[in-house]
Image (cartoon, rainbow, N blue to C red):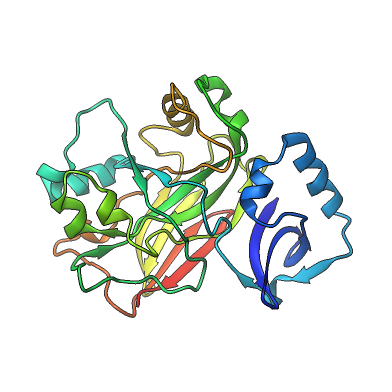
Length: 286
């Protein structure tokens, strides 16, 4: 199933796609409300929507980020594909070299996430090395505490695409990555949430990025160094991951800083992020 947050006639709606391009309105004010819902009640609402007469055409709405305002910062993994880890270390060994055997976690300020078609602010007054990172994001459907690896997928509601936009000069200029990753508009998300039943666990979907039509990133989402079960297990030890938590699992090789010379984004560039089975998240830098 695919779930969308859309704008229609000035109203923000949470919808379920019940057929190709056909949306049924759901009785939730926001996607966060749906994700906080009791699992049984949520399933009943989704089942009822399949027979809804209150339908919309996907072509007649504006698609927003599925979670425009996450309840908390997005959790991210750094250097979680081996080839990307290598290119990052080559770009700046001091900033990106990490001990083997440990995942790199950081949080990303996401007060508001742009959806498909919404411009990415370049913040070029303080940024001179704007970069892109297409990532598979995991959406949790219930609170997770002390989760065993073998039970991790029981807590996953679905998946979406996140572009972990990064200001490399700010990221490498500080010991923490929060500032360089968390500027306003740096968390484009969408176009929808695909429920976990649509994919194998773990998902093995093609993940690609085009910049102005040039293919830059091309990998598969099961090539993670630290997989989804490890991530949920490790993060939930002593820390509660609330329903609605968004976890961006890392990006493959081919980001701008990985080229010689680097290919950073500039105003007017079109960034097309795609994950097989989820769709396309496309934004233009302004």
